[in-house]
Length: 561
Image (tube, rainbow, N blue to C red; front, side):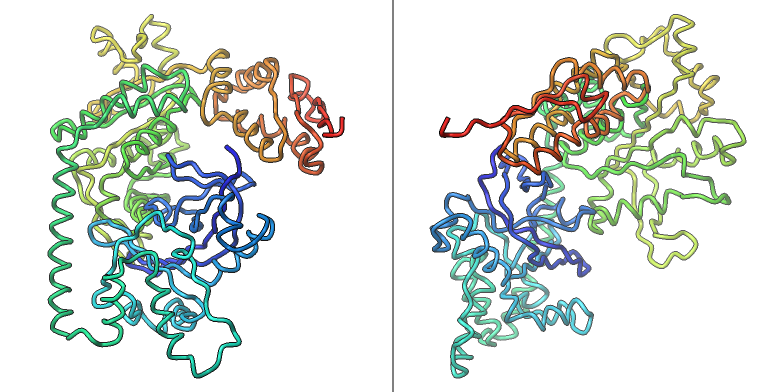
């Protein structure tokens, strides 16, 4: 995708209670994917829009705003070339800060403010000397207006403030213009006028009280309707499946079965008292599968390292602290956290009866209550308990993953395995459970509460398919990176084969593909970056994997030739 857009990258500051400021950082060219709503800059870094729920919850504290087509920018800012237009646009955008808030019904609102005029007020809020209640823009009880996209034309996104040379006696006009700038682009003319009248004290207090109560009632009704719609909405298994297999290669049948089982649990409450146990060799995509399903279901995802969990009385982490992390990841949105997809990784390690894990199988029994809709007192530190938030597990989806290599070795000896559908046959079910309990040391109580799915092993052919076909293939990623420098990157078949063969030898599955491809292409990237525009194509092969300095460069022909 070409760099045919320009956007402003903004830094997020969390103010508490689902309120944020976004401050201008820099303006950069890049590409924009309207389907995913992701902006990718020239260095390959991806940003979500500042009004995206994911951008407000992400550990990455940056998002993008002020998206405009590169071809339109010179004309809109009054410059002859794009090189002149981008600095001008950056200077205009730097004059604004965005206040973003999430309403009770989950709708996101934004109000851009003239940072020059509001700087002292904003800084006071961040430093704690003033509160959001003092921010008059939000009115009584934070009256907010929905954000509207796209904001066209450019003048609605950024408004040039008065020249510094204007006379002092125009201060009153400047104050009025500041109010207009604060609302411009996100409000209708009627809404803008209403808020200005409110700031000027032209609306009676009684009228504002009535408005406050009306907004509260409408918000409550919207939340209830939203919940009802979600309960009645049918999940599109085909759509989720097609999206998942674009990324997760060679797992078509098991992926389909897991998606169907999760759908059954979500749409039928009586089926959600069991968890999902996803098994398979290291690097076959167990965690990636659950992460993708959560993404396309629109639910938050968290992975918990089972090896760090302990029973009460031992040093380690516990579920209360893990659910606190989930709560924070969801932007302190309790309802959203309670609908999460929770994956416990390396659960096979908790079946060990060795002395290396002194809490041993007791953790498996500690996990059993999650299936029954238990409420946990989530807190950052169980000992301190400075803040406690009750998190209920009834509507969560629980998955557990592990390799269980010894279990499958034993099953293979007995001639028992999972069929082509990656689901064990009914006749062999008892033998499989027995192997998980005897060889895997998993408790009978735990195994009685989970459904077992096995992902396909990543053989040489499957690993080569991942490198060629996955939309997250590290080869595809590097081709995009080189493409942004104007150079085509061609990976020969023997390059793909060598990377896959090394993964087989290391028994790492897909897990090590990224680092292997990155290492093999590092010297070529350094060369192309330092000589940008000089090479039409770089060709990498088996010799490049063996020695990253070995690659073929095809110089760019000059136009005169």
